[in-house]
Image 1 (tube, rainbow, N blue to C red):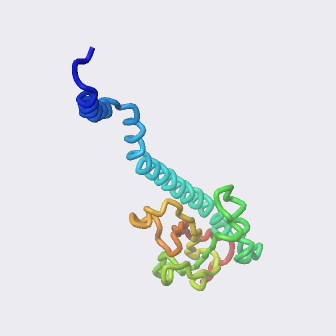
Image 2 (cartoon, one colour):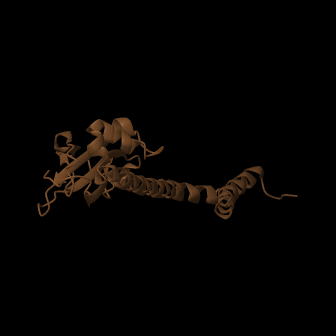
Image 3 (cartoon, rainbow, N blue to C red):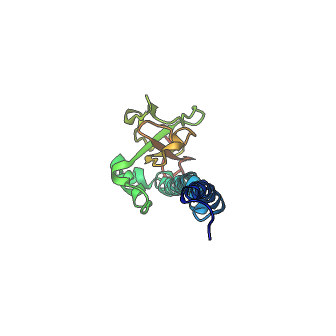
Length: 195
C-alpha cells in the first residue's frame, strides 16, 4: 500500500508519465521506414521517369535515322525523281517507314536539299527564335550525280521538366527537336545534270 498522501501520488505520477512517454516515443521505430521512403521516393521516381524519357528520346531518334536512310534510297536510286514525287508524297513514303512512336502525318517535317559536287553542305537545324522554322524546309531531290541531304525533323514533347535544365529540351515549349539526316550522292539513273 501507499503511505503517501493522494496529492503526492498524483504529483509523482505526473512527473513519471512525460518521461515515460518520451522514452517510449524514442524507442519506437514503427514509422521510420515510411518516413525514410517519403524522403527518398520523390527523387527516386523523378530520376526513374527521367531515365525512361531519355531512353524514349534516343529510341525515337534511332527510329527516325532508320526511316531517313530507308526513304532516302528512293531519291538515291532515282525512283522519287522518275515517278515525280512531291514533298507530300515523299513524306508519305517516310511515314510508311515509321511505326507507332510518332504522329508522322501532322508532326514530321521533311527537308530534301540538293548540292552540286564540291558545294558546301548546310546541315544546321532549321530553328529560329527557339522554334522550328518551316520556311527553311524544302524539297529538291536533284538529278543523277547530285549530292542530296535528306533531313527529318520531329518536335518531341518533354514531360519530365527538370530536364529543361540539363539540355534535353532544345526548342521552346519544352520540346526536343529530333533530327535524322542521310547524306548521299544520287546514282547515275539517267543523264548527269545539276541541281
